[in-house]
Length: 63
Image (tube, rainbow, N blue to C red; front, side, top):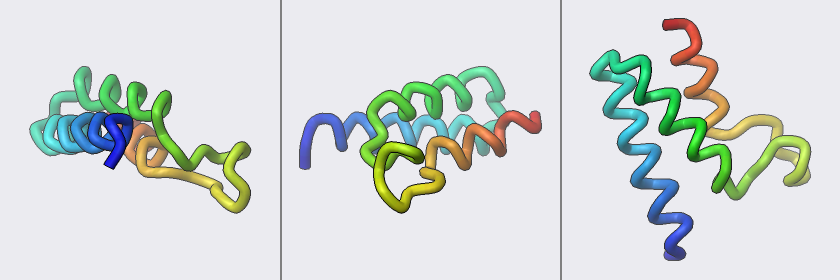
């Protein structure tokens, strides 16, 4: 597993925890950071239309 993948997992876990803790400041910040290291990028990676960070950014935007 690459260091980038480990960082992605760490940030996603933190964002997920903050999301369920209703921390609407930290959760989106985590998912924004993930966008920078996401390996499957819509519009760049063929066939990819969304990814986990984008899904959760849309969810937390409602709060």
